[in-house]
Image (cartoon, rainbow, N blue to C red; front, side, top):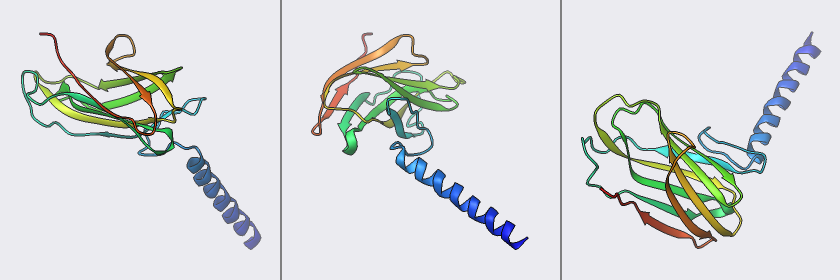
Amino acid sequence: MKRTVEMISMTLIIIVLAAFLGSTLMGCSGDGTDEGSSNGFCVRDVAISGCKNTSHTRSEYPEYFEFKALDGGYLSVNHVNALFNCVPGELKMEATIDGNVIKILETEEKSLANCVCPYDLYCEVGPLSNGDYEVVIYHGSFEIPVRKFSFTYNKRLNVKYEVTYDD
């Protein structure tokens, strides 16, 4: 009986260690929102702020995107003052890559109020190789792009694009 308990304990320890090492070696870690793919591309460290200021019109805060190179070939994507419903349910960010096109999807679960609100959305995607990339931003689904940005990825990349609206 004692030998059986020792064997079960040892088996559990091995399973836990294997799971820990496996998740560490995957390369994409963060808050549990990783989106992995067969080519190793993933999303990590997704962070979304709360509502900054409720309004019934576009915010007076300027909306912009920042893209910055990080260690290990990752790209930080920071969408500042993104406008969503002021009662959106859960806000999410997802990303995929197809060649040199990075597609980022920003979604809100629900639109429960008649107002908008600026939020900050952040994630890291990669790993990327040095070269030219296009980032395409989608809202709601991967059907119709709402923004496109081009840049050359290298370790010095640090760019900001302001969003303008044609009224």
